[in-house]
Image (cartoon, rainbow, N blue to C red):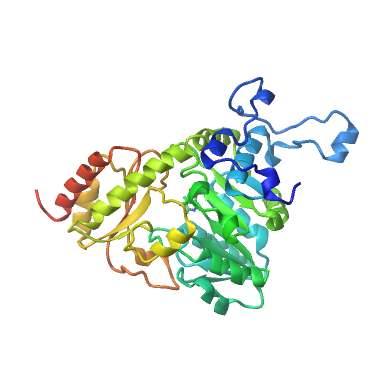
Amino acid sequence: MSSNPDDKHPKRDRATEIVHAGREPAAQFGFVNTPVYRGSTVLFKDMASLEAGRAPFTYGRKGNPTMRSLEEALCGLEGGHRCFVTASGLSAVTTALLAFARAGDHILVVDTCYRPTRQFCDEVLMGMGIEVGYYDPNIGAGIQALLKPNTRLIYTESPGSQTFEVQDIPAIAMVARARDIWLLMDNTWATPCFFKPFQHGVDVSIHAGTKYIVGHADAMLGVMTANERAAGLLQKGHWALGSSAGSEEVFLGLRGLRTLEVRLLRHQASAIEMAIWLKARPEVEDVLHPALPTFPGHDLWRRDFTGSSGLFSIVLKQTRRERLAAMLDGLRLFGMGYSWGGFESLAVPFDPAHYRTATRPRHEGRWCIRLHIGLEAVADLKADLEAGFQRLTGGS
Ligand SMILES: *Cc1c(COP(=O)(O)O)cnc(C)c1O
């Protein structure tokens, strides 16, 4: 396998790469898309080749051509060395953590991580004798002070779940690298389009493919991509844990990927337009969106990211639950539901204090709404929220 990522991934524009990467129509009788390969057993032609174990595919769980298509495409887009797909975003998170952490290790996890990631750390890793510490997303190079002799890895997610704190990933990476500590990052928000984890010192990048890669709210999928030094351990963990993805889901990931960039550019533009409009609303105390110049993490976001997706949060002035329920229950276009990254707009209420232990959120005690801005027309989305604000403030 080549050690220079440029040999493996010729320089083409991102938009071109998204369309062509991981496809080989000639190997599929000219059909444009790699089909769904279903299968467990792979037959070997003789005993010698079975023993050699060098066939491109050896067993369904370890990979098939559909999986390889998506893995190659995503690996190239992220600029990694090896990529593996898993059954869900959370299984990518847990598989990557288990691939690197050992009993007796100390690991540092960002306080604003995706809540099920925290639950896995608290309920499973701690039970296995792994010490978990949570750190302030604004810590930057100050993470040095939290390192212990047995610190094995740092787990980051930027921007932070729900509240969108932008981390200084290069500063954290510098500290980690100097001590040979693995740096894992959940890169779901930015997608492979808007943040290049390996250029910023990350060792393993994780995506909930369920979100923008699948992009249509119709499948669960996880992705783990490693740089060269992390690839061996990640592969061992992945194979040992058996966390592979179903072929149909992988196909839907490939199908979604081909339109990722055009969808994201629309999500980005609409979300920024909505964020600016919301920032000026009297009902809204604050808008938590990294692309807004007034947002505390904006400078870091501008330095390290090349775009923003459709997910951000607003902080409301109104604190009464029943008024908030009236606002949300009457929305016609924004659905209320978990997940995001599909074509549709979503709104979910949350209290930021429930999500962390090491730090206090800036807007403690306020109701917040996490919004996913879908592909609908912005004017219609504004009208839906505007009517909602009237219900919120008790107007007719
Ligand atoms: C949704 C999500 C996950 C988990 O993905 P699933 O496919 O739902 O398991 C992980 N990280 C982030 C940031 C997410 O939003």
